[in-house]
Amino acid sequence: MAKRKVSSPSREEGGGEARHDLRLVRAIRRIIRAIDIDSRQLAARHEITGPQLLCLITAVERGPVTAKEIADQVHVSPSTVVGILDRLEGKGLVERERDTRDRRLVFVTATAAGTKLVRQTPYPLQDTLARALEQMSPQDREQTTRAVEHLVDVLGASDEEPDPLTDVNTIGKLKADARHRTSPRK
Image 1 (spheres, rainbow, N blue to C red):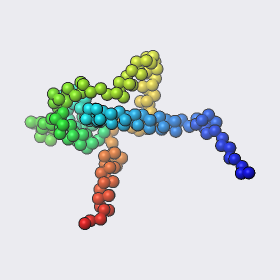
Image 2: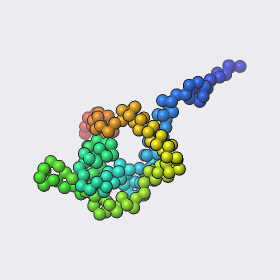
Image 3: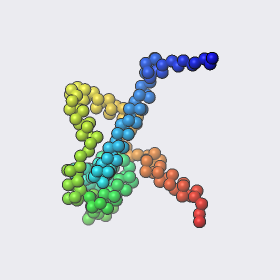
């Protein structure tokens, strides 16, 4: 009869010191997944993704705004915002206009349709979070907010512009370029 290997409980399961790093990474991944699901639901129901809605909300709330200012507000690279603005402009939700004094500056303004969409489109994940926070005591809300903000600082996820080599869109473009270069020519 073969010996059965008995495994000891992992540290994460309570067999020793908890692996807080793994627990936090798993929690962050679950949050990312919830954000992704929320964005897909928005796209299916309202034909706008989460990132598009965030950029549109910024244009509505801040009036004429540059792509760089939108990028700073939604924490993505300016090149990512340009692609998002192209799609929003194609849908008639924003307009871009060059500054009359400095032609290098381009201002983004939400159209009436864009403003209407922002007012009518629920943002389920944010609404869920807002309701959950309302159920907490003011001290728990503050503690939770500070803990998440501290985690952002610890991870180095500051408000600085993303590194082009780690930006999601740049990585995708690099992979597509590599596939294109290695594909056989006909």
